[in-house]
Image 1: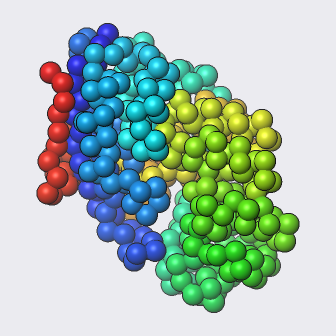
Image 2: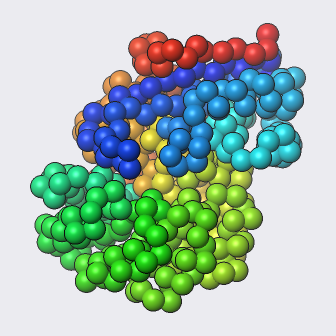
Image 3: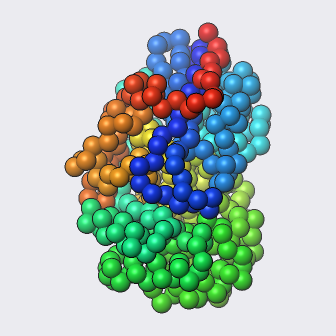
Length: 390
């Protein structure tokens, strides 16, 4: 089998719920849909997850350019898609970073192999370890009334963990919001916080000490991604466990974090790691250091959620934590696709979320069918789709 053609389609999915990030309300999730064709008629389909200008520096144009101008001609066209290790290593030699572009290629390759063998991706990654994956729900920074309402809806839907976005508002408002949510959900619900690296060390030290009273299970990335020493120092001074996210992209970053004692656990995003193959290695390093792994996502469609579900259902080490691979739930007002199916996603069959759990698809490959009508409707204005190969 050989890869013959690669299509890149820029898509923008509207966000129906209120999501506030550092630049203000987020209105849409921009991503790249990839179709990887082969000479045997099998097509791998995957999406990059929401692009991360503020998170990792990727844009739709950058992802497409890397695939069209570099990865496609030098590592993919004419190659056997079963040779995933070879292709991923080649992409790493071709370009530094650019992990979202590498990840969406990795996903499409796994989709092809799974379809060719007639098995879901989790079978390629070690087999089904758990039937369903416990999940937490992310509540965006907003006013206390809205955040409490969102938190209560999530708890009623079965979620046992609420992650609260902080660091975008004045710290007094952040504390008021966390206090209000803790009071509303009670003591049995786990609360976590995520400033997305929005505090400096001094702010993080003071803010975390003030939030200790609310029984915070963990703080994700309290300081900028480059301040690994700062996280190591924070761990000595506060009782809230520290989980690096933006700091922990490349495998070498994990070694630095571990050697400096800068983490109580690690936050994985499969796109951030560069795909499934590298994510498995990422998790292995975390396991060797006895650090639990919590997995999030990049606000993609059901395709991205399915990829994460295959990984989390197949790896025993990731069963130690609840995760946040919410995918289309980030974009819609649905909290449970079993009761409220999502019909306007890129995937016809969005993975099943029910009672606070995510279920991996059992179809071959990623296990999702493409919603071609949605693709046409959601293509990003001003950016043309591209095709390379025959």
